[in-house]
Amino acid sequence: MYPTINMHIAGAAISAADRASEPVIDPATEEVLGHVPHATIDDLDRALASVDRGFGGWSAAAPLVRAQILRRAGDVLRARADDYAAVLTAEQGKPLAEAKGEVLTCADVLDWYAEEGRRVYGRTVPGRNPAVRHIVVREPVGPALGLTPWNFPMFMAAHKVGGALAAGCSLILKPSEETPASAMLLVEALYEAGLPADALALVFGVPAQVSSHLIASDVIRKISFTGSVAVGRHLMTLSAEGLKRTTMELGGHAPVIVCDDVDVAAIARQASAAKFRNAGQVCVSPTRFFVHHAVHDQFLEEFSKAASAIRVGPGSDPQSQMGPLANPRRVQAMERLVADARQRGAQVATGGERIGNQGFFFAPTILHDIGEDAQIMQEEPFGPIATVSPFADLSEAIERANETPYGLAGYAFAQSSAALAELGNRVRVGMLGLNTFSISTVETPFGGIKYSGHGREGGNEGLDGYLDTRLLTQA
Ligand code: NAD
Image (cartoon, rainbow, N blue to C red; front, side, top):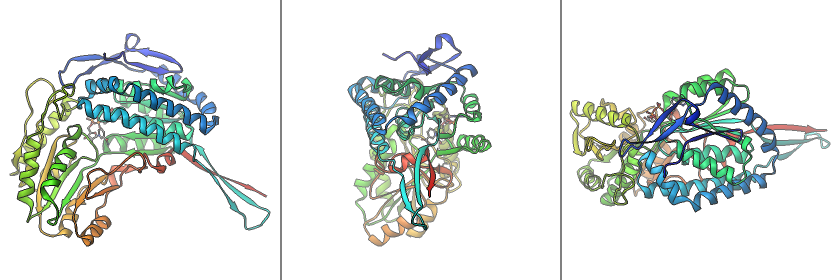
């Protein structure tokens, strides 16, 4: 069922049979699912030549034609959602229902960009001299490079591919080598829908080698990356050399402020569902809970009850509500963060440990009585750990919420309109959920401030990063 992993360069499929490779591991069983090929320098140069050639034709294609191809690819994903979800679960670990949701959302993402790509208009500005007209045109920036991670392996790829192709850019996509099939199936759906082979290339390899070679090339005019702050900073440094445009979707460490005038039990249940989705490996995952001291104990109890009731197991088992972590690095990080917090006096309300010794399972974990000096109060866990701390007044809660260098997502729950207004004004994040954990859809801009990055994906902003603005003045 798990497909052979191929790179796609200029219409040729290249498998691990012909290249150096690495195994793809099922995180629930630790079994080898397949092998992912590594691009040689020659492969990367052919990919560059391909998207350079492809840019000419694709950027000149009518937006309607580009839209039709994106929509057809979305239809392919919908028709095969069950099969593709099984592949996504096998390599990434999330429960099948979440995986199917991801595949279907990718179809929505492609539909959205298909529509928005038809609405990339310029404008005419009247001149100061009536005989002069200024014409503002928006044009694709050139061949782009998309680098995507393993937590939402198809969704992240859909945003980069959808945004670039809808704007008229060609693209080289380099997904995570740990979850290669999900992105490959998306790319193959686009070819099946009629995308010219030179408009999109798919490569894998040693990430640092691939990114440094491709970013150094004059062909690439735009880099879009989703991943960690450290890697984002490194890629921006490489991009600066050629003054290249970047979009950076980096980590987050989302605060949640719970005031004392809300339905505490209902929010605790919603918090559990939001926190442990995708085993917490979500950049907008709610992690640092600051709860008014009057309702702190009740919230902690209800949140812990809901978390400890989550059925953890292989994503392929329909009974499982949370799967394994995607790789052993995350299990080690969870163990390190819990040990450090314990050493500094934190209590474990539920979880705190790895489950079993086969597969990368870790229990949904809630820490409390936690010192502000614990590593987890500054370091994004990117896994199934939340912290709960009491606060006395709203201003203090907001200050603590803003205390990390991150600024991706945040959440706050209150009834008082004065409190909601203050929260909206003062919590420094790119996306704030007020009385909800569901913050974004394909129609809305997704992205962060501060160390969480810059640029937006989704919304009508999603195309901006792939477009240049030019001015023609006609006398
Ligand atoms: P990592 O920093 O090693 O890698 C993150 C991603 O960047 C991976 O997909 C990896 O293949 C890629 N990468 C690494 N070095 C690269 C390079 N030189 N050039 C191009 N790509 C490169 O971390 P990890 O262990 O894979 O993930 C853990 C951390 O990454 C988490 O703590 C989290 O902060 C972050 N992360 C964030 C997101 C997100 O959605 N923003 C997704 C995945 C990981």
